[in-house]
Image 1: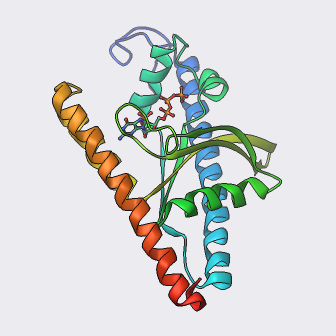
Image 2: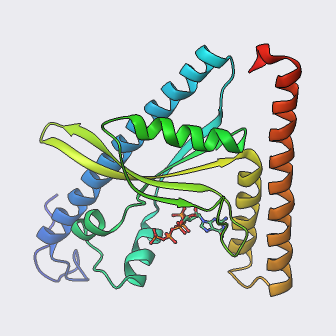
Length: 227
Ligand code: 0O2
């Protein structure tokens, strides 16, 4: 069946400019593919760092890697907040966190080691680093954020794609996941005293991280074969 969408009629009640719609639609599909490919490139690099660590030191610094493409709602919300038009071109030009990779490490020192190994890759360029471990957010949030660019090779040539990498410990991730869920559930209306309690809990969790790392080193001093 042929649909006539070029004018406002029963098949096109909103009088959509179909040509423009199709162009934008394919634009978004291409963007999706590009960022998804960039995520694969970064994940592969991280997996190689982790397995080399296992070969050399008989332990894995990475507990788990996950990734996500920013949701359309979240993209639209961020562009709106920044007063930027919602188009494929402006997404490419203005947002650096469409592709996100989260790396969960065992110890705090693993976080900095992973970041430093990654920075040695000559096809990776670190655009921005935010250290929310040394400078936690007022909420208590701790994590190391890197905005990096990675090349993706397509049939049309090389594209340089930004990816946000969040690196944190299991303990920091435990806090961030629950805190995010609590804020989401309460639609951001968390009373100040509960926000303060969450911040204090983040300190407690951070102290636990430091003590676990200390125990790890003390055990390795007893049995240096492990380090
Ligand atoms: P989602 O769903 O992950 O996309 P920017 O303009 O990019 O520099 P932005 O986006 O505020 O500024 O960057 P920031 O604060 O460095 O990092 C944003 C991301 O960090 C968030 O993603 C969260 O994943 C995480 N994050 C930051 N602050 C907190 C916090 O207080 N609690 C928790 N649980 N997570 C936090 P988005 O964009 O919010 O969402």
